[in-house]
Image 1 (spheres, rainbow, N blue to C red):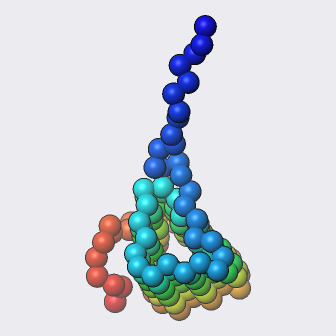
Image 2 (cartoon, rainbow, N blue to C red; image 1 turned 60 degrees about the vertical axis):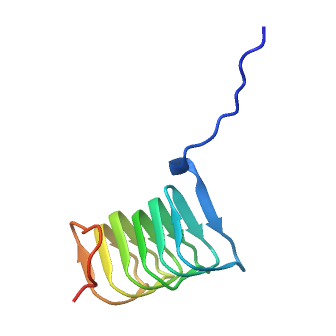
Length: 126
C-alpha cells in the first residue's frame, strides 16, 4: 500500500530568510520567522523570531524582533524583546532596548541602552 505523501510545508516561524552578500534591499523587511542579513537593508526590519546581522551586514533603519545577534553595522534603534547579543565586530549607532543583553569587548556602541522590560513600540529613548 502507498502512504499518503502530501507535501509538508514549514511554518513561517521555522523559515529563515536571507539577504545575501552583495544584495541591497531598499524598503522595510518583515517576516514571522527569522532573518539573516549578510547584505544591506535601507529600511526597518521586523522579525517575529530573530534577526542576525552578519559581519558584513548593514541595516540603516530600526530592528524589532524577539532575539538578535549583531556582528555588523546597525544605524537605528534595536528592540530585542528577549535577548540581544552584540559581538565584537559590531558597530551600532542608535538606541537599544533589550530584555537581556550580552556585549562582547571590542563592540562599538553609540546610543542609549535599556535592559529589562521592552515596550512593543514607542518614542525613541530620551
